[in-house]
Image (tube, rainbow, N blue to C red; front, side, top):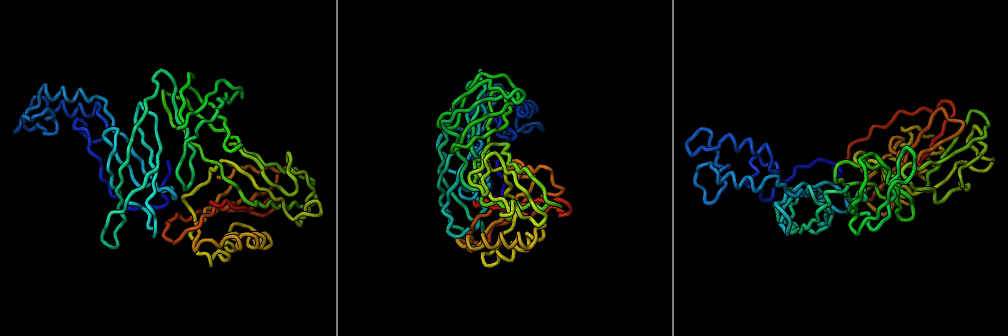
Length: 430
């Protein structure tokens, strides 16, 4: 599940619980039985008496067989967990526990302080023995005193479907850094043995991303297409059910790759997409890669100053650390940040010249840096002969209406430009 970009105090008002859930952990199990056993055959006035264990109606203030029967009828009862996120932001709001299926009224405090926010949310409904579901809903703002966190109320309806206990079941979701997660609906999925790379099974998800197959436990690859682009995702098959959350595709815009060998060299430059995806635009033409002659000053084939491409791939980026920058401060921010990362003046000028005129639609921008650790999960840059140092930085950028978003300051990796150096910058617009 997603993680909030900043921590806020949340109002936690749980839904009604099962009275047999004596320790209030939303499941009736042996821990509750231990509590029940401690007060077995006691009554009011006894030191071990616990009124919570007086379950039978009408209550008689004695813990006896009638109470035990009520407790046994609820054995292994489990509440439905409702994890709520803000739709359009992806921030975690809170978790609610529902006693069962049906329509429930819930209240919660929203972690956003965004003027004009329209109360759109999405939620995961999770319950053992049933397929997980995700759904969106609208919530109404509850009038509150000025200066206090917003409170919302909504009616939500939960109607879950049981899994097949004799097969392996799962639900595949496509996650996004801001907007509501979605089902991988009506999609053919190949199950691949990662050792032999042979297909051992296949299935088709339904309209809610669900499937049920006969398969041995193990680690596999799920291969499927999203918007004509192939995903290659690891899948652990254990037990009878699992949710699979895979990132949706994003578009990497105008990465520039600069190459500075110590002397004129013939180079091979390749892009690899370990989780699927591919190049959509390139200059010069990419085909199976670039084969170029690079000069120490960065000139390529006597014509180009850099390699240009755009691509689509699953979004394995990080969205917890970054900066919020006012639109009028963007140029100064990027110049300073790129220089601190290790880019030189010519590379910085290229970035600013292209991107500053295109970032004018919002008064503030959230900027999330993606370094080699994140980028290697999405697009790997391979150069032969290998360089001494590689600097990679792709900014994920999203427009904001205000500067209320709270982000963790990133740790900028230490880079060097000694020897054969390759550098790359680019942008993902969210």
